[in-house]
Image (cartoon, rainbow, N blue to C red; front, side, top):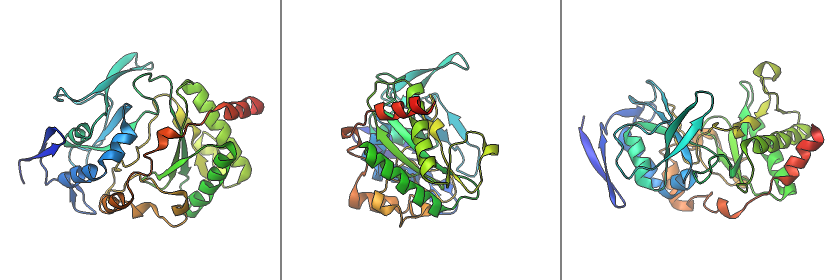
Length: 304
């Protein structure tokens, strides 16, 4: 096994150790393959993570081994790695989390065995005011993918009625995420309240959906619209983040018109680079379309 290779990323050089270690046994893909994947979607992953506190999911020996949830930037980081300090009330502690501003920082995190990138829905200018509302379509254990597809269209319909532009992506698992830019003017509690009001409206329009928080209260064949993902310090895999499974699936932006034709396993580190080279980052203009949460907060007031 090679000791190390040096990867040039813009004006930085990242030394990647154990490049031939197999991280994804189903594909036979290595740590170096993972680096090359992130380089191939560079603008997209930086856009998804830009200026956001980011939790790292690290797999030091590959995805079949130990998984480490890393809030703090790993030790030994070069001076050009950037961070933001966040406070965790439960533990009364702070942590300096990775705050990506350039691609070399992503590659260095991969060198440190990061597979998944899980950013906050707020940015470091004010970590307490989210600028992203996240709609998480989370299928139950007996919920089929075609249910996810049908519910996605209901979500799209309601967003259109509200005048909100939603940016869908596969979760990299069995679900679908939709992101909506919002003004950084509300705290987490209000964004969560708005997300719950939206989820309740989806549930009113289709019996295939539940918004029940406790698993015991859900039908396993239903889809849970997980409004709680908008709670402070809750994170989900970023657009273009690889997932820690043997198939090396990717949380991949899709067009609304692609939802009916795609399958979650269509998108892996083996297939997404070609797609990205052809169509680029489907979320590249997300910051240009900002939706005011006022109608959803009115729905919340009406329903409670």
